[in-house]
Length: 185
Image (cartoon, rainbow, N blue to C red; front, top):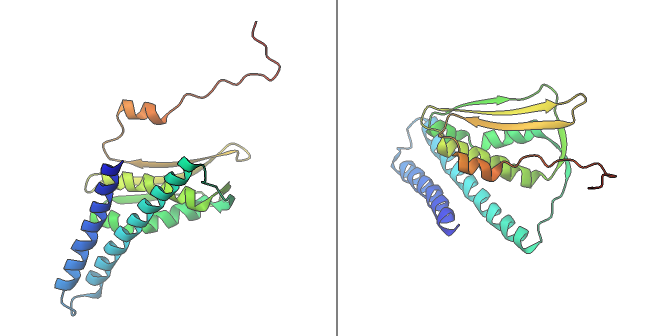
């Protein structure tokens, strides 16, 4: 874990350092969009570092049994759009096409905004990290059932994908349902 954290922090600091260096080297009379893009890159790296820190703190709270979810109605469409805005500069740096597929009407779920935003940002961060230059990432929120009883939130990319071994770690077969009055013979 220490290796992963130091690697992610180093990546963010490298991006911020490069952005600051380029800002210092860019003449003040250069087009505003050049400087604005560099500021956006630095802000994006800083946002990523903030998310890494929140993730570490939340993992510590979970291990201590002190992590609490504060569930409130949350529009998944808004969360997806917010997350997409936060990685806009990273997508631009790698020339990654981004598609956000949302239903016309907002879908409300009872969830902890910060915790779910952290999950989504981790998914997007990994998608960006493992998607090659000029790749594509698609985020989709799709209602399921009539009336809507489930929501499918997916992040798809043209990256390397997960090995079968890693897929087994995150995918569990559904548990069989046992009728309440069932008795084994």
